[in-house]
Image (cartoon, rainbow, N blue to C red; front, side):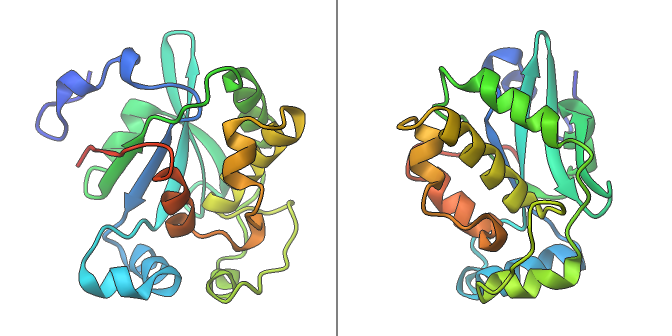
Amino acid sequence: MLSPLYFKQEYFTLANFYTGDLLFTQGRGLFSKIISLFTHPVSFFRKEFTPSHVAMIRRDDAELFVYESTTLKGGVARTPLEDWLIEHKKDRIRHFQMPFAGVRDLISDELVALEGTPYENWFKLAKVAFDSNKAGANRLFCSEFLVRVLQEVGQKEPYTIPHMLTRNLDPNNTSPVELYNVALTVSVPNTLI
């Protein structure tokens, strides 16, 4: 169990996390600040929560994992939730419990299927801010990875919430801020740090 020094320990029970839940972070490092600045400068300068990264929970029996695509891990990787929270202890984190009942197994399958996909060349990040990233699905940014997961689920199960949330998003050009705003339409975030 996590140290109460970093987190509200009572919140970190299996009952509060489900496959498909989203974790948004606003990192404090230079790369995170550049992402926030390029993708939503108004919020960045107002000092509002401006996510620079997004990840997804996968619940596997009694274990919780975080799936994300990062430069630090070379692409799509799985990390136990407890380890992930320690890695991000200096970041601001918001957790969304997403209403994905009925398609959680499909989400889980898609997360596992994309594990190991390399990270997109980071210099293409600036293109996302101008909707001009034309890269394909063989290299993925964090938000691109999760939009692709949800769109794939939506193709298999049309008229479900993953389909409705992401049908109009271009995965190549969706920033963490845009995905955060989409998540706000169906859920309320829990602030973890």
